[in-house]
Image (tube, rainbow, N blue to C red):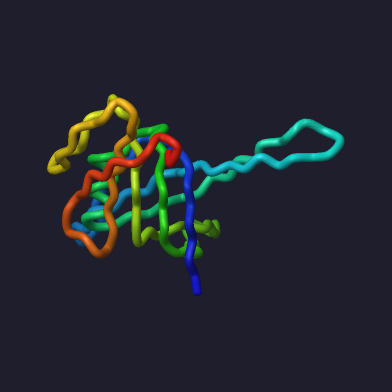
Length: 141
């Protein structure tokens, strides 16, 4: 089984592009981190960068809904990609959720009314052909 779950921050503004056949795609960096506690030293935060590749409607959704610094949850599979003699690991998502702060407006086609004590999540998965707005508690994001 090849399944990857990531929760982190978007590293740069996602830019929609098209393949030679016209299929929309986006590739963006995502940063995850963990804090390692040591007995004799202060905690150390370790950062990792991941390359996320989205195609089709998911790519269009990410470009409309996401911006640099947004928190994003990605579920998908890792693939090895060889290009110009370099091997990179990429994640091809089957689900993407973008967590926006309460003052951020929704992307087109997403209707919701933000609540002062909540954040709003926008998600897109393979099971859907539409956008969804879901209210979540502050402690989720």
